[in-house]
Length: 356
Image 1 (cartoon, rainbow, N blue to C red):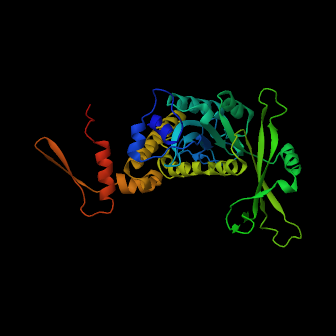
Image 2: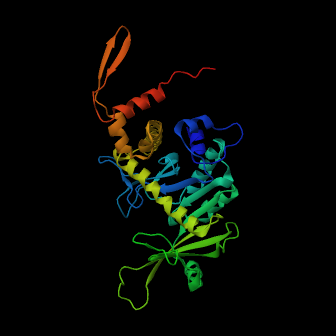
Image 3: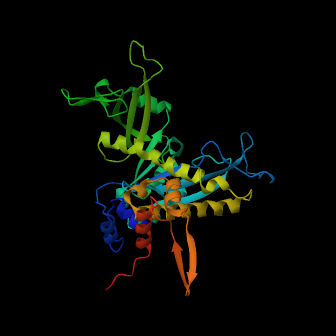
């Protein structure tokens, strides 16, 4: 499934990999885009609670509600919702970036085995994953990165050095297009400046650029001069400024996967045993990917639908099973709204073998 997924993402497969016929069946148009690897912690800041009646593990949190911190990587495309590429269960006192470098490396190797090219892959993450080990792991594989950066002193100095004429207005909520000036009139502007990440660490020093977005602070609407809030990201990609900034902001789509898992299988962590919960996390990822595959085979709408919608329209279907003459007949409801979509999925997964 991941092999076809990398082709859906628009990446040129390695010789002998992938199935272009599968893309043709789904009506997918190829484009020169990045295969994006996203990483995030599920329930960041609010660890998964361990069920009551069990002993508190030694690696549990001591200063806040204790539990476990799952870490996951995903692979999204423009045509479908993300699938989970890798998971790792950590103790509740784990920082967000702990174990992320090795997990990202495993995900990159998995994507490469499926036919993806490292030079057409992009790693995206929030500020919790702005770490030398993670960025260096991606760069060693020949992969570009785009990571949010907190307001460190060196970042603030780099932002302050940007010239006032370097800022460009972008399309943002409540933006207005000026026909005369052929530009956006917006409260958001972006600029870029050369930047070296982890300059003090010779083992992880990486050269790139800092892309900064500034937005007018709504808390100071009557200020004599604009009061700006700055959001920076470090990237090594060669995309144009506007496209690179827009591409980075799309990293929030991983939150949809987190929400699907939190309100699905991860809402029922089985026990206080770490190994059992780690297995449960793996099974949750497998179930999520199978559900996403079913949605992609059904229709373009189901390819991007949330997991709860897929369960309601494709999985939880009332039916009556009848057995006769050593055969099983499934009696489905008549004139129900999802009949056409369900039959499309059924025929896609039970199609007769192709003739030679």
